[in-house]
Amino acid sequence: MEAIEDLELKPCTSSIYLRPYRLCYRQNGTKKTWDFMKIHDSVSILIFNTSRQCFVLVKQFRPAVYMCEVEKHHPQLFQNRDNESFSRLEDPLPAAVGVTYELCSGIVDKPDLSLEEIACEEVLEECGYHVAVTDLRKITSYRSGVGVTGSSQTLFYAEVTDQMRTGEGGGQAEEGELIEVVEIPLEDSMKFAYNETLQKTMGVIFSFTWFQDNIAPKLPKK
Image (cartoon, rainbow, N blue to C red; front, side, top):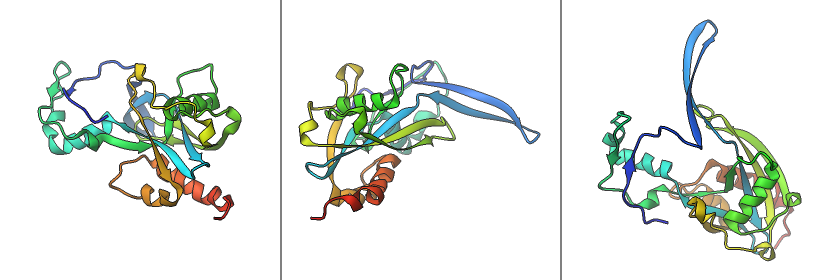
């Protein structure tokens, strides 16, 4: 996961995952413009293994996070706005600065499947657990990146057991995914959530807090 090399920063002239736009409009009589990107909506799943009382997360290298750290050390890398050129990073940072802990997630790009069906596919592909639509509990949906993308993310909760694990997970190698499955013990979860030395998404912090409020009080006492 952390063998990152041959880094080149290039202009993105086309993508199947994001499309940039500029909206021109008038608000309260004032002309305005706003740049934004259209991306897919997504689903995320908080997975709790009841057999071992732990949360199941995924850990992976995120180029966007990595390049934000790179910019701090090599600000000149982003100063060239020539769409025909690129910048080679000769002295890359350790890949670990771009590794994040996340909920199992996936984009909504299959119109013939429901959000629940997509979530079940992601749980199997990324974490190796076979869950049914009826195993999912919807927590909520919300907007993410409201200043740039405004996309919708739907968050589910699923309880699994060791017997429900039918594979290793790790994502789909043919799509370039390289994912590590990580278990966080329940008793350590809130300490983990607020440990700023471990990069994670807001979804992890929010869902762990939701669990403490809604699920933890109903668990059998030791």
